[in-house]
Length: 415
Ligand SMILES: Cc1ncc(C[n+]2csc(CCOP(=O)(O)OP(=O)(O)O)c2C)c(N)n1
Ligand SMILES: [Mg+2]
Image 1 (tube, helix red, strand yellow):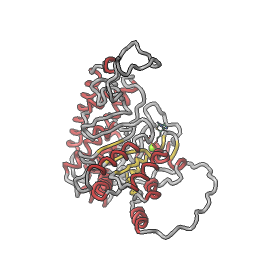
Image 2 (cartoon, protein in one colour):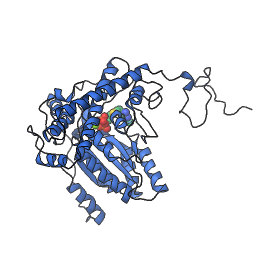
Image 3 (cartoon, protein in one colour):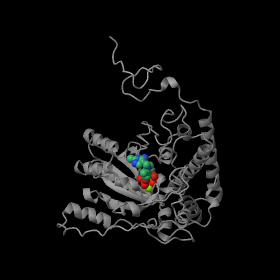
Image 4 (cartoon, helix red, strand yellow):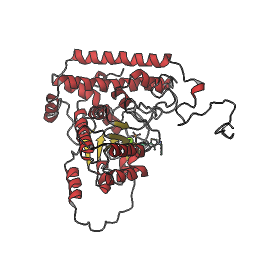
């Protein structure tokens, strides 16, 4: 494993918004018409945005800042050790997934959470078991932190029958109704309308309250430019739906930057047109992410106030395993490595006296064993049976008749 200790000296805790990158010359924008006076609801949104942390702070090579140290001191050591264990699990799982892809054990596309571990763990720590999760194709880590067995997740990547989606979904389509993980979507923005619909179902069937269910809908920064994002946020606002939209802003939408692609690059503001409050949080800070998500989920479940959370994060590798990311500057890549949240948390925990070197080493060794077992399980599992080809594809039974071609008429009922 490229263990955290192989990345020494990276002790930054919080960081700035991703480098702007070169924004192409844009035509000058017209000034908008004078604004109408803000209503109380608009003022509330503006206040929420004004108080969102800028996600900027000095990098430090000397250990956690005073604020970070205080945040660590306020947490039970066992909770922090568990967050670290989960972050290492995501890290090692993804490294092994990349390796298995290059060994042709995994087909199709494969997108990794490498570099986004603090965001993944923080968001999942905030989500209750009763809540529903809709996410993207970059979802392995979320499935793991939702408590799904790593062997079943790896088996799905391998396309095996023991996989979380029976081997029919692959890397981009992890699904587990029991864990309330309702996908895994390969289409950019494809998850947003069904997630909003799930929130409508919750609102329709139950009352708001502390114990109510809520939906978390994850997406990337580039996804905020998809029409379904805007249609869904509008409906969530006018119907007061219990949903938290989370934008994992890794600064890149495939080969383009947020600055180049988004008219409003401060993505937490993109709900303002719908009076959906937004909050921006440092995606490298697991506790900050957890707390922001918890607060947003509280608003969603107890007050039926949808919220937009932006977690500013970065990915360490290309868009997918096969992407060499040549569009990225060496400085940007180096910066992402320097801010790597896994070794950062590791060194902070040791420096704060939460765990000692022996404890983190034991966690890392245990995780290595878990992931090795997951790979072995996936490798030894059988592929899905051809006879099950139509299983889960249609709501009603469809005969799996091998002689029928796609253009043949379908016999609906026998005379
Ligand atoms: C509707 C649609 N358009 C284009 C694509 C190709 N595509 C896959 S990922 C991606 C970029 C998405 O970027 P972002 O939302 O920032 O997510 P990230 O990959 O950074 O996590 C694109 C354009 C797609 N899968 N679906
Ligand atoms: Mg992105």
